[in-house]
Length: 129
Image (cartoon, rainbow, N blue to C red):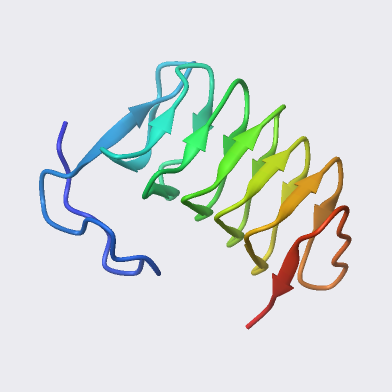
């Protein structure tokens, strides 16, 4: 199913109609929008309000919950982006990005970051609104 890109996305990599599809979650439920240039594993979960775009890769049992956004980033080893979290670029393995945190580039492994309690492992930058 092709869908029009949401108007509230922070990226603009492919916002013409037809460049998007709706992810089907492992439980058979309808998931969020995925740009056709991105990859989401059949075992991954993407919430109906979430967006995956650019050259993002959502691997294994990783999850994008709430209105989370993943843009040109890799989520693996059950990494989670939830709430209004945004992962932009870089690689996120086994950690959680939540609330309104935006993480750009670098890598985050085995930790979590939230608006009120940012916790960073390795080299990642955290930017809050």
